[in-house]
Each structure stands twice: as structure tokens, then as C-alpha cells.
Image 1 (cartoon, helix red, strand yellow):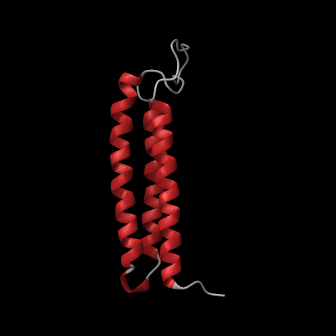
Image 2 (image 1 turned 45 degrees about the vertical axis):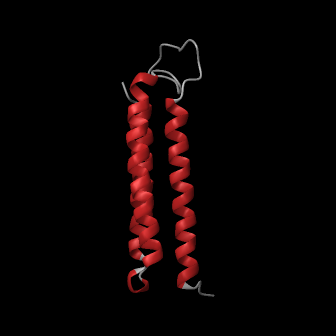
Length: 108
């Protein structure tokens, strides 16, 4: 059974939404302070060293937001019904989410 092109577009939008939402939640989970005293281990636990992590989380939130909007536009525009631009958009969004999470985690 084939899934109609329009339904695949909305599935792509749903996937991009979940990926972007999880990425932003992860960035800010690392950046927001949760402890009064932090352990002296590397990498610094989540919620410590906010002076360094907040600007990085802000930057990566903006990057993921731009990529999310681009992926949604590609998913809904679907040039000539092709699936690969949507797959590339989602793959780039996943890479940016993981790279951003690592950048926020290891911010020194």
C-alpha cells in the first residue's frame, strides 16, 4: 500500500517537529542551572557553567529553528513530488541537533 505524497509531507513535518523539539529541549536541559554546587568533573554536568552554555544553546537553537523552517518548507513544497529533498532536510536537521547537543555539552 502506497502512502499519498501529501501524507508523506505531513509525516516529514511531524518528524522534523519531533527532532527540532527534542534538540531544543536537550540544549536547554544542559544550559539551565539546576544545582547550587557543581561537581568538578569533565564534562561538566548539565546545568553547570551556565555562563558558557547559554550563548551556545541560544546559537544552536537558532540554527535548528532555521533548519526546521527550511525542512517544513521543503516538505510542503515538494518539488515535483520528490522525496529526497525532504530526506536530506531531515538528515541535516538530525546532524545539526546532535552536533549542537555536543557543542553545548562540551562548552568550556
